Image 1 (tube, one colour):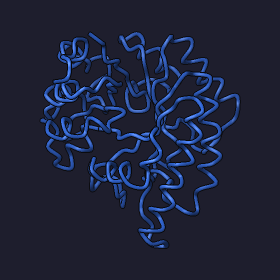
Image 2 (image 1 turned 90 degrees about the vertical axis):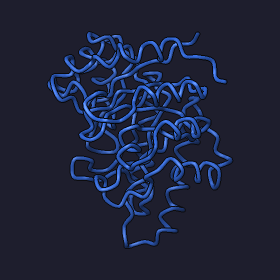
Image 3 (image 1 turned 180 degrees about the vertical axis):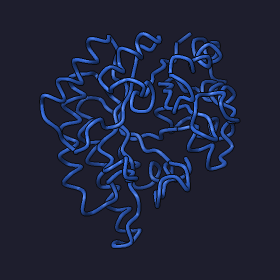
Length: 278
């Protein structure tokens, strides 16, 4: 039976350590894969900073399995720039550097946050801008067999971000992005669960469009088991429906990260021996 790989998001986990020390900490905790939000404050950074990131990954012996495109000023509350007509040059510069990092690391999954709606432009104009941005990103990463991921986010925590349900993404995938096959749904249990999506049913129904899965509990966005989401049942539904991609931990640990990994053992019987889809 195939094994579903497991990764840790080092932008939100192992934060008790400096960023470049986190790949090694993740490997010491048993992870062979890590993922990251865009790790620099600007859309493109110096070659020295990129070298330092690649070196940290190589020295740790972990694979970079996911990387976000530049999302704007995330600490200040921005959640992407794809829909913003005034931010497309930033995104273009970012795409070029992201592809360069991907070539060096083998990363092939890339999260492109849609962005928050701005009343200086119509919703339709921003949707058209986002669609063009997704197509440009998808065309660039297609050259390395990469996939662009679109992620719904939790209401009330992410400003005027318009994608809040998996169906919001599926409508794009089956509509204006239908001819762009390397764009998929990022199924984040925390964000969808926070929006009162029935996770087990959604996992079963949406599995054909899902390209990546992220885990955190709700409320609180802590480790699995710290809240009340049906995480194990949802993962079971995903794999029963045929999902065989990455399972990524993306949570804010309630204790030092190494003390919050009991959920890994609980998922292993599902993750390591998934039943054949029926």
